[in-house]
Length: 228
Image (cartoon, one colour):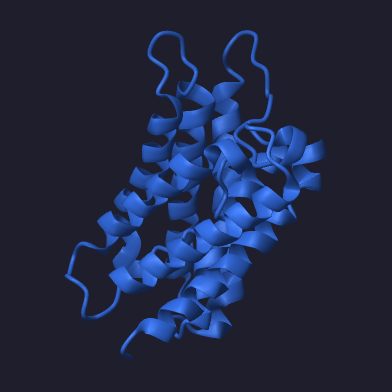
């Protein structure tokens, strides 16, 4: 496993976590000019688009353990490289959350709050149940992998995959932020949860299990319909 690939994955996941969660923590509720749900959704999508063009040719730009597992199950990535990729992604996400914490805590009257963590029940933005959160994360990640597999297929229009994948992530956030604050990415969930602790760590299991299950389902579904 080339260290350059792992480093690229760590940097990319740092950017996704820092930029995506940063949009929620720093900008979403800013007085008079808050970007709201739409802005946060686009921030996550744009983080993937920008990194896909920057490091896609180096590491494939997974930035997400569920994507790595899904691509491996879908026959697009070697199984032996899954664990190193996931480790790099989690390290990048924790570092991204750490830098975000340093910045956010520099404001007078800083309140950690949820710090863009994912949750269900009392910690769901809309008060949705564990079952609702589980179904949402599985379905959303399944379609995310389906789009990734399809847009990166050799017969798909060349050069447009990052745009399709980024817009898919925007759409996912537009639908699921009220339910779980949107994970579909175990690494992205882990970074903020480590700083929040308590409930965020107690509920983190769902945001590992559901996205990975969804990623596998999406990859298998695409293999079932693909001509090759």
